[in-house]
Each structure stands twice: as C-alpha cells, then as structure tokens.
Length: 482
Image 1 (spheres, one colour):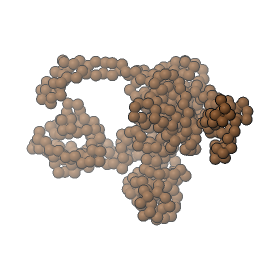
Image 2 (cartoon, one colour; image 1 turned 30 degrees about the vertical axis):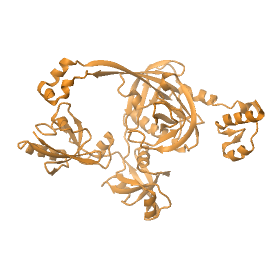
Image 3 (spheres, helix red, strand yellow; image 1 turned 135 degrees about the vertical axis):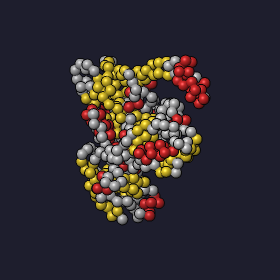
Image 4 (tube, helix red, strand yellow; image 1 turned 90 degrees about the horizontal axis):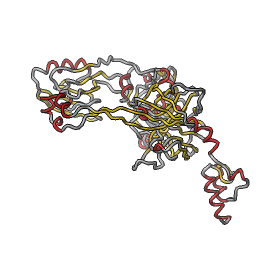
C-alpha cells in the first residue's frame, strides 16, 4: 500500500471517530489541508471498544410470549341478516375459537442495579410471559411494573436477581446536539447483541408514530427490528435515548432511526414505578409560527407557538397567558411548534412552576405557570346507551381534560365521545366508531351524556334518526329508520 493510499485509508477510519490524526473535529478544515500519517501506535488503535465494554452489559434482550385467541373466518357471519337471526351460536358452530402463541423479541436497558429495566411499550404489550437475557447470558423472568402507550415506554422488574447487575447512567437529552457521536446497542433480528455507531442526525422529530408525546432524537446509527427498547448512548457512556422506531421502506435500516429522549424516560419511569404517572397539562391551544406569521407579528424568525385558544381556569390562563401570545421557550428551552411545547410540558415534574418565555406585541416577557394535573371536571358520566336507537350498545362519556389526557386526544376537546362499541350492537350497525364525537341527534346539539340520553329516549317512539358525528376532524351525517 502506497503512503498516499494508506493516508486516505487511515483518514477515513479516524474521521469516523471525530478526529483526524489527533486534530479535534472543530479543526476539520485545517486537517483536510494538512493530511499526515498517524503519529503513534495509540492513534492507529483508536476504538469504541472501551465505551462498548462500559455500556453493553446494561443492554438486555427481551423475549415475550403472547396467547392470541382467534376465530376461523365464517363467510355467513359477514351477512347482517345471518348475524342477527342466528347470533353467535351459529357462528361458533362453524368455527370454534382457537388459540395460538405469538413470540416476539426486543431489547431493554438496565437502569438500576437491583434489576429495573426500561424498554418500549410495544415490545411487551399484551405479553403473558417476559424473559430477559443479559449480556453475559444469564436469564431472568420479568414482571411488568407499568407501561405507557403515549410515550411507548414500559418498566420491567427482574425476578430473583442474584447480586447487583450492571446498570447504565442516565444522561441529559437536552444537552445533546446534532452531530454528536452515538452508539446504538440492541438485538436486531434476534441475531444477538449488536453495536452500531453514527451521529445525532436531528432533534425534536415529531409525527413519526402515533404516540402522543413525540420529540424523538433522530440518528443514522443502524437500528433494525429487534433494536426496539435498546440503548442510544453518548461518548461518555450515558443513556441519552431509548430506541423506538425506524423509517424504512423494506423493513431494514435506511439510516433513519428514532429514540425517545432520556429526559422523558426519567419522568415516565418514576411515574410507573410509583404507580402515579401523571403529567402537567397546559390548557391552551396554538399553531406553529410560520415565516408569514413571523413577518406579520414582526418577529425576528419563525418559531414558537401562537396561542389562539385558552381554556378557562387552566394553568395557562392562571399563568397570565393570552390569545395572541407566542410561546418561545419553556424553562429556557426553545419551543418550535405545538408538538415540542407538549413534549416540554410533559417532561416537567409535578408539582411546580414552569417559566414561559413569551413574545407579546413585540416584547419578550416571562410568565410563571403553575404545573398541575388535568382536572376530572365535568364528571365523565360514562354510560352505556340502551334501547332501540343508533347508539344502543355504545359506551359514551363527557370529555374533560383528565379523560382527554388518558385517551390521548386534544386537551381542549369537549362534548360527548364514543368510548367503545359493542360487537353485535345497533351502534355497530350504524357504523359508529370508538373516538367519534356525537355532535347532533335529530336536530338537537349534544353537549353532554345526559342530553344524549334524553334525546334518544324521546326519539324511540318515532323510530326515525338523523345523527351527526365528528370523526378525524370531519362531520359525518346519517339517517336511520329503526
């Protein structure tokens, strides 16, 4: 190998570690001009190995088993007449329920030496058995302490732990910057523990999955199926994120992976372990500040959240926020859009106070907003509708901030929501769905469960129904004769 080729080879290897022949990455421009061979054996042997030895023992493989009950397809039961006339007994005669076992795998991270493990909700969701295999091949059964679908996080506790286990140190995801070197450790495709390297590609990524609180760390470190729940670590060996999702077109890594920031992990983990996972609520709604809005508001740059609605008696109102204000930061951390605002609020500890940096009529002011849980007011009045009407067999409830937080809908929502629909009910035949908001029945606006009950009771004699529901932001109408 000639000196020129050797120099290019060493340069490519060492650049991956953030150094060029001993020159820090901040001096890249000069290093590009001043290329030279490594000056010592130590420089040639630069490696992530010490960091892997420090962190990998705290990353585990998770194997789950789930028993699923299914019924063979019965073409007759697709006909509403057969379903109503013969019922479940007819369907059961041609296809008895069968059980099958589904097995899946994932990864997790030991966060306490006594055996507390953090992983993804989707890794252990519905599992009847959870088995955890450590880096040194020790195996333990695990119990589910708690799980939070909104953040896709879950906490496990290993059973019958014999001695102290290797645990990882929790870092600070707010200190992470784009371009930082990271390692992703997990069990992709079940091949065994695997380490990949990359950089932080982006921060505060939202709209990636259907979770409620999204502000992912994006990385180009290879993440594949089975890596879910594994560790994203920085160069100091600290956990900065829990690998959760990938963007892929073929099922494999395309260099776009997403991790739940560790500051969210800390809050959720404490709540699940204590059995009291509660988040502060904001009580205001807003929109991103686009370039056009920034010009009209005479702001220096786009960014922040323009407040356009505030719920009475909410923390936002009592903190002094007004419609037209632009929320620019929370506790000194910049807020670029409503998703980032919601994430920042969700990572704050209860009780307490949040400092809001607000732009109001061109001036920057600071507001102190109290941190409180969402109130369970008005009463939910969760009820099943009976009788012969399009809502019969549906369970409905009054929406309040606490319920909105629980089911992951807009905290500003109000009205009557469909919580569930019976499988063989009139509501199912009317094609009502879980999550529908009941807007109007026979020309009467519905603002409470009590009003809905009164309207359906008075309308059953005529048997004619005109209903309107809101689904995914659209108003749907239908007419029935029962």
